Image 1 (cartoon, rainbow, N blue to C red):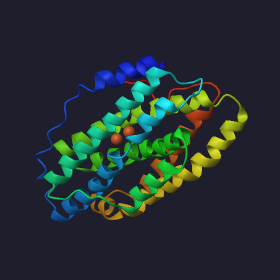
Image 2: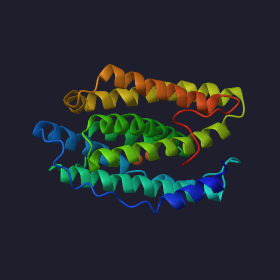
Image 3: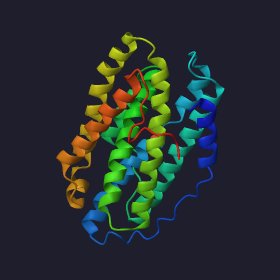
Length: 245
Ligand SMILES: [Fe+2]
Ligand SMILES: [Fe+2]
């Protein structure tokens, strides 16, 4: 897919209506509702903070991007903003409160501000893997409800975001040096990010009956799949790195 295809994809997807999550009486267990509201508030904070990169992209030059990529990146930022609003709706419907600080979010913000666009996008890549894994897992464990559907929808959108950012990194990997550098940063970053989420959301996962080892395994598998999708010489479709639907 060319960058113009991604731009069209994001333009089409902007028309997706914001889901109504008002049946948040589910789950009935008040402890689970409290844990879930807190976890979703942490994810909400993470989804809300991607704005700067869209501006920086207009000053960022590499032969592998064009204005379609820059416009698509702006749409991607807005889509993450929509995720933040949906998660905010979920938190409020569960009787929880939005938050302005969290230690894992502090790490994300630190990572995103560290260096240029490439490193920021690498941090974003890890955030997409987190979204796919954990929104998907939580959605699969909740009883059928508007919140479960909204999380599943967001997990599916995160898969497309991952494919979008994977294409960027693939194009940058023209010789062995960048590939080795990519793995040396990506693997520790991705694994550490996944572990931080497992620790931070342990109570919610326990309450939902999510096996943390299984969650960790799924996460690491997707980190490795993503790394392979970026660095492999011949592109191959992956479970989570497919063309947009
Ligand atoms: Fe998102
Ligand atoms: Fe995303």
